[in-house]
Length: 51
Image: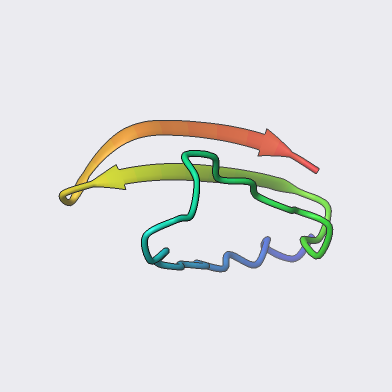
């Protein structure tokens, strides 16, 4: 069985126009993902989700 490919996607948001941030996962492949919310180089929220 081949090993799963791991990708590290990273983005930086300029000042959002509202206090809501939406993540559209339509383009992601099926699998398990981990979302880290970071403030001043510290993880303040870590969550996992499956598509």
